[in-house]
Length: 262
Image (cartoon, rainbow, N blue to C red; front, top):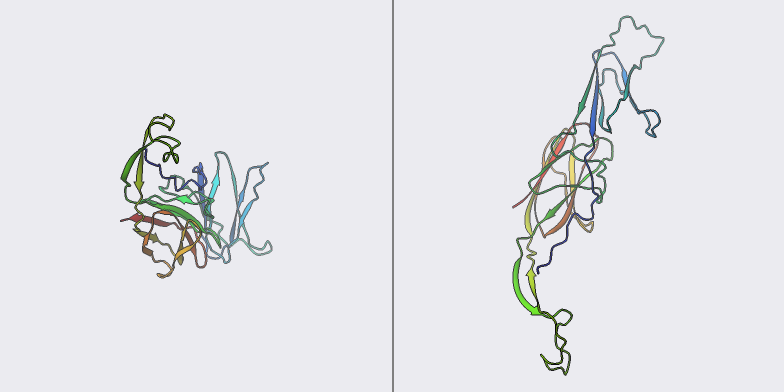
């Protein structure tokens, strides 16, 4: 019987998509108005509130990719103006929008910051990710597949005996046993052509290609902010990782990464 190749993704966490991934966007409608946004977790939980404050008046705020279960939640919108200032002539109008992006095809599943937490990236698939805070890294794992194995030879052996004992007479001194046909399979280790396409956003995105032992294969950061990054490389069959990050900054805009094997 032919040997079954091991699952290249066996070392990865088993992950399930969350029920809800929320984005909350607050936009002041006055250029002179400074408004803060606060997310309040349910009472009795260990989660801490999330406070967002603008660095300048009229700055929109985004609470990005908040993972929550079903239920009711509170959001607080408040003025950050000094209380002793005249407020009569000011507009406190704003827009508050909620969106649930859970159904986005190929959406990343956080956490995915380490090799073991990596999201699977199948050949031909596109995954969608976000760099939501400074130092954020999204790791994806993919497998380079060898061509279909070919049976090189087959031989009949008796289980437990690879060759007659020294001095034994074949067919007489050996214990009886049913012969088993063992198929010898040759695995083609020829490197395969792989193309990685990182469709960027406004950030200066980059990615590192790493093998399953942590060795750096390539570091790609050539195109600059807002541009796509691409890499074509010959890789032996095996498991590999792509770590996406930004050289500086963060935002709540998606990027897309696709991998193909020629």
